[in-house]
Structure formats: structure tokens, C-alpha cells
Image 1 (cartoon, rainbow, N blue to C red):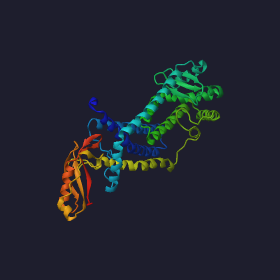
Image 2: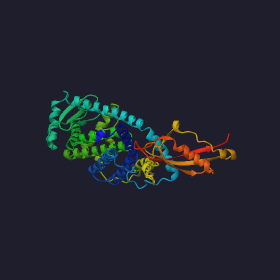
Image 3: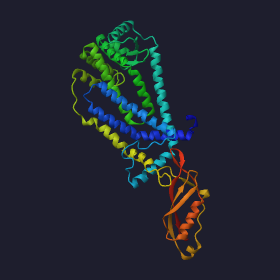
Image 4: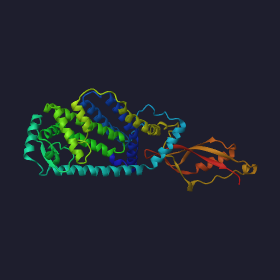
Amino acid sequence: MMAAIDMSTLVAGIGWMLLHFVWQGALIACATGTLLVALRNARPELRYAVACTGLLLCLAWPLAELCLLLSGGRVPAAGGMPFAGALPRAAAADAAGWLAWLQQHLDWIVALWAACVGALGLRMACGLLWIGRVARGDGGDPAWQARLSALAACCGLTRAVRLRIVEGLASPVTAGWWRPVVLVPAALVAGMPPHLLEALLAHELGHIRRHDYLVNLLQNVVETILFYHPAVWWLSRRIRVEREQIADDFAARHLGEPRRLALALSELERLQFSGGHLAQAANGGDLLARIRRLLRPGTQALDWRAVVPVLGLALACAGSAHALANRHALAVDGHGAVRATTPALADFRTCARPAYPQADVAAGHEGTVTLRFLVDDTGAVRTSKVARSSGFPAMDEAAHGAIDKCRFRPALEDGRPVAAWTQVQYVWTLE
């Protein structure tokens, strides 16, 4: 099936998929944000599942739409949203204008997106190669490897977990799924009390137990593909925050000492600030917030400030949602033609200037006639009618005859030629 898809159709499908995700991502973020606020006092595992579902929808919805477009199916531009046809006539005309501009520049939009995806993908690949090289290196410590293996057995892990000590790392990092490895900064081994470093290792074992490395890889893929939408980055950050809280609970439960992990995080914060690093731990989570949560667990009051970013995102994308919705909502008339699409363009070499009727010249008649006409998918004028008469039938008929001889580049919808109505004015003046 895919072999029969030409490049222009593929580019158009990808382009409209990216543009539609502007409002789709806003809708997903609003729904997810509302659920997270409602679940603010639930277990972090539940909030983590909600955030992961939201991020997965950010990938699944546009991909499903792209598959439908490429298979010849019709996907409503509003994605089933209730305001699909809510724009007034004047606003719809403005929306059609800039949507036509987007249609004409889809090649550049897709090319720029592809270049950014390539750069981010290369960055992710370099990071994975670096982790693989470090994991295969000789940076282990036999004594700490033995302590990590014993701790892993106490935590119920049956797989062997390797330990590597790395220079220049800001905080411990877990990598790998089949053969997991914990990368520990050399500064922590040298400067942190052993019982506190062991608490941090228990936290990393929580990530390994839950296979968080695989989820983090999927996050990176979604961030790479949909990098331009703030909803993706917000959801991804929420996933990392909840993930760190889950790993904190795992470590505190197996250590039996939440205060010990809190002291380890406090010491990690001190060492990071002294080394010039931001206070971020192991791929996500604010250290001070995590320390407060371990020492003073309790219910959270409703903070309306948490809702403001979600509402701001919804308002910022509302205009795009309305305009993109009406790309198809204005679609079909009695002749099977579309109206809100890339307009048909005349080939002026084929358009002759209409002959001024001699009787009207002799009588000194002047006026303006507005014609509406239907250009079919081959670029020919199928029919025309007077939208506004000049007041003189012979001048209106001459305009009809002139437009019927013109050839056009047909209008486009999703990159495909379609029949569409357009209009033109003929101004009759005597010189």
C-alpha cells in the first residue's frame, strides 16, 4: 500500500499531521492536567500511569491520523471536537487564507521538522553510544559492586546489576534493560558517606525493578518527533517527577529509613551545587521537593497555580484548533466542491482580456461584475455564475465567456487536486 503513495501526498500528510497536533496536543495536555490535579493526593504510581497515557496519546493520535490520510481515508480536521464548525463567516475566510499559506509552504515545514528531528535523533544516539561505551568500560569498584549486588538481592532483583564509576557525572544514572548498569559519579564515591550512597543505589534499583529505562527511551522518541509542542515536554517532565517519587518510595520501603534517603538527597544537592550543577537528580525530580516529601508526607492542598500552565496552553492553541477544524468543516457544497482549501491559481497566459461590448461602449456603460466559478480537479472551469452583476447583461455575459477560456492550477486538499469554487472581478471602465 505504501509503495503506491507518491512523495507529495506523503509530505502533505505529514505536514497536516504536524499542524493538527497543535490542537490535539493542547487537548491531551488539558485532559491530563485536569486528572493530575484531581489525583494530587493519590499514589505516584497512578499519576505516573496517567502522565504516561497522555504522552502515549500524543504519539498515537497523530500517527493514526497520518495512516488514515495515506490510506485514502477522510480524517475530520477537528478530530471530533465540538467547535468544528463554530467559526463565523469572516473568521473562516481569514482562517482559509492562512491555511492556504500553510498548504503552500508544507514542503518547507516538513523539511524543517525533519532536520530538527534528525539533529535531536543524532543527539540521542550519541548519548546512547556514550552510555554503552561507559557500561563496557573498566570503571568498576569490587567493594561497591559487592554491596550493590547484595542490595539488589534484598530488593528482589534476580538480574545481575553492574556498577560503573564515572568522572564528571552529576548524579547516579541507571541505563540498560537486559543488562542494567548503574553509573555513579566518582565525586559521590569519594565524598559521600557510604550508608548515604547506599540509599541512592537503592533508589536506582527501584528504576531497574520497574524497567524505567525503556519508558525513558520512549519518552526520548516522542520528544524527538514532537519536539515543537510544549505539551510533550510538560508531560515528559511530569512522568520523570512521578518516576523519581516512585523510586524514592521503593528505596525508603526497602531501607526502612525514609530519613536516610532524604539525607542522601540533601548531600547530593550539596555536592551538585558545589560542583556547579543544577539540583536535578537522575533524570528528573526537584531534590528539595523530594526531600520535603520524604520527611513530611501529607496531603496536598489544591494549588490553582498548577492549573494556569494548562489553561494558558489551551488558550494559546485555541485559535489554531478553530482554524484547522474549519479546513474541512467548510468543505462540501452541492457540486461536491471544497471551499476552505488551497485556492485555484489562474494561468494568465490562457486568460484573454474580455472584449468590451460595442453597444455598452457606445452607451458609455461602466461597472464591475463579480463571477463565482467552479474549477474542477483538472484546472478547467466547469461552471460559472454572477455573484454580483455590473448592471448590464452584455458585460456580464462577456465576463462569462472570458473566464470559461481560462485554465487554472487546481485547488489542493491534503496535497490532492480537488474541485473548488473561487471568484474574480471584472472591472469595466472606459478610457
